[in-house]
Length: 304
Image (cartoon, rainbow, N blue to C red):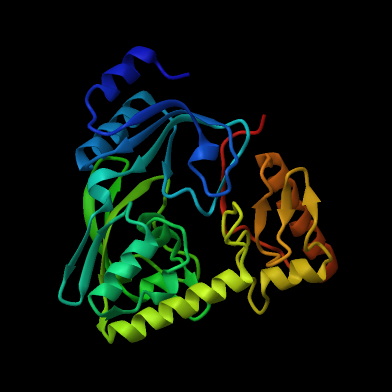
C-alpha cells in the first residue's frame, strides 16, 4: 500500500495530473484491467525525475505506460505507481529532414507531421495506435519496415534519474526488439532522420497502408494489436487459424475472425478472458505444429 502522506508530498510537487485507483481499462486499447494504485501523468522531465526518485527511495513498484496498446493489464490491477508521459512529451519538431518528437506523441500524428513536410519513411506507422516511446522500445513495424530504419537517436532516463542520448547503433534493434528495458529505462524523445519526398505520393502510400490495415485487422474493436511475435518462417495468425481457433470466444473476448493474431474485447471482456485465449492459442499451436508462440504484448499486473 502507498503511504498517503508520502504520496501527497509527491503529488504536491509535480506539475502533471494524477489519479488514485485509476481504472486501467480506461488507459489501454484493449479496455480491460484492474486499477492502478496511482497513475501519474508527467508534464515534463522534472516530473519524471521526481517520480523515479520517489519510487527508488521508497521501493515502490513503478510501471511505465505509453498509449496502452500492446499491453494486457490483469484484473487484479497494478501496485504502486503507473507513470505515463504527457504535456511537453507530446511535442513534435521538424528541422529540414529530421523530426524530434516526445515519447508521448502518437505515431499516426508523427507520420502525418512528416507527410505535411514532405518527408517519407513513416507511412507504415499510420494505423498503429501507439505512442512513440513505446513504439521505439519495441521497434514497432510491419514485415517490410521497422521504426529503427529512421531512428537516429533516442533520449532515455534511467531509474537513477540519469538522462542520456543513445545513437541507433547502441540500442541493438532487431525484429520487435531493442535493448531498452521499458521498466528500468524511460524513452523521453527520439530523433528521426527521413528522406525528402513528394507529399502527394507520401499521403497516397499512407492511405494504402491504412486501407490494408482496415481490411485485415479488427480496427473497429478494442484490441491490443498483434498478440504474438511471428515465429521464424511462420505467421502467428495463420498458425492460430490452422489450429482451428479463429473466432473462438472466452467470456467477452474473442480471437478475431478477421485476423487470428488479434484478440478483441466484445464489450464486457475481463483480462482473464483474454489471458485464457492467449494460453489456449500457445498450447494448441505447440501441440499441433511444435511451434512456440511468444507474446508480443506485455502482460502486467496481478490476477484477482
